[in-house]
Amino acid sequence: MKRALLGFLFTAVSIVTLTFLALPIIAIFARTTPGHLLDQFSNRVVRDAFIVSLKTSLIAQAFIVLFGTPTAYFLATRRFRGHAVAITLVELPLILPPAVAGIGLLAAFGRLGLLGSTFEALGISLPFTQTAVTIAVAYVASPLYIRPAIAAFEGTDPNLTAASRTLGAGPTRTFFRVVLPLARGGLIAGLALSFARGLGEFGATIMFAGSLQRVTQTLPLAIYAEFDRNFDATLAMSGVLVLISVALLLGLRIGLTWQRSPSKRSLYLFGPSASG
Amino acid sequence: MRRTNRCLLVVALTIALGLVAGQAFARTNAQVTVYAAASLTDVFPKIDRTQKYQFGGSNTLAAQITQGAPADVFASANMTLPNQLFSRGLCSKPVVFTRNTLVVVVPTSNPAHIQGVYGLAKPGVKLVIAGPGVPVGSYTLQILKNMNLFGPVLKNVVSRETDVREVLAKVALGEADAGFVYSTDAKTVSSKVKVIRVPAWAQPKVQYGICVVSRSGHKAEARAFIKTVLSPAGQRRLRAYGFLPRVKPRK
Image 1: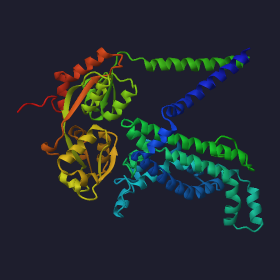
Image 2: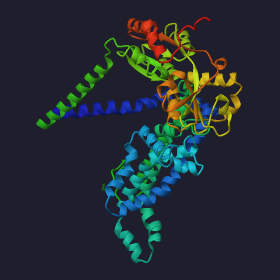
Image 3: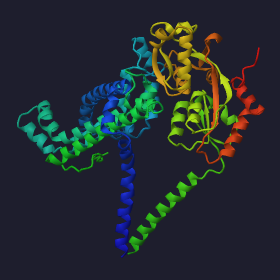
Image 4: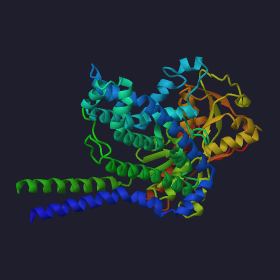
């Protein structure tokens, strides 16, 4: 009797939770039709924002992979003094309020910032440029790649790496032919998540890079700027971002359940790093 | 069995707590919620500190009110937005409660060596202005048109901010070379920015409008708040912060 009641209660609460999470998404599409959504792409503001977002996110992502992968491998395979500090540093942007990240970036790279005078002397001014958007995106999105990457590298079977080495493959060859393919799943998951996070970046961008159409105005910034002027456009842009996020998550989930991998993997994308 | 009981108790308590907290937040004891232009951030709490304030770009606030935000009073940095709400039946007929002027601010160090408004047309100047739709953004464009600087100066705009205080912050931080703000905003960070006057002939008509939001549940209190703002004491406060009398004195 009591058990049945508890079961019922949990079901009811779960339904409330899921409805709460689904409602805003449903509401966005309830107020636009797909045709209307496509129409908005003739709107210059929407198109420009889409291009700025895509460009800065892709460049940021390239840097995240280029620098994040070796860093993740290093942190996964080496143990040293301050390892925990390094992991914390990697994770920090994940929970840092974006506005704080924006202030931090200004304080570091702004004209009057720590490195600002150095940049100024070189004739480089970062704030209000597309580079600034890319930096903001890379900063806030990096943990979503590096964290799963560390977990993925830690999950690779050391015996396989050792076998590769004893069979005569050098460390470079082993890394590219054995370790990377083994960690592939985690790396791709991280890639998709950090890309999605980067596309949604708002707080750090508006503080560090400002907002100017065709230059620094990304989709989230355009949504905010157009909110009072053209609600349809904001709905359309929101719809686009929702679709991209859903596509990334679904693609990942399907990809991950399909892939048979030696390392155990859960269906949840935000698995904790194996060791902190 | 006992464990299930405890579980149930915890769940029930959580739900009860949630409901109570929700109620507590929903209840407002005759406190008026005032949605006010960002430029009023410092002065309004000094006129009446017992009310709840939400400051931001007047355009953003107007859009929020249109979407059903729980505002009782709307105080805008122009007359256009409250008039629009009025014509749609969303607020009472707005009245002018103060006026303002615009200035150009530059960081105290003045990195771009700007001496006058015409200096903003120099190539390479990093100018920030408020976004389209934000009242101070429209006023800025009017000034540039009045001074025949529209094209050359607009080329130097590096960011369009969401409200006047964001413009001010970017200049006060030294990230931007110059920005257009209200003279009253410049006064709030006088140690960090230098003020460059905009000639009187180029000044737009900056009137602040205030109205009672139609959906408000505290209309009487909202009207009382507006009365306070219009009262001699309220007007004195506004003038102390550099705002202009609501009616232009006859010369």
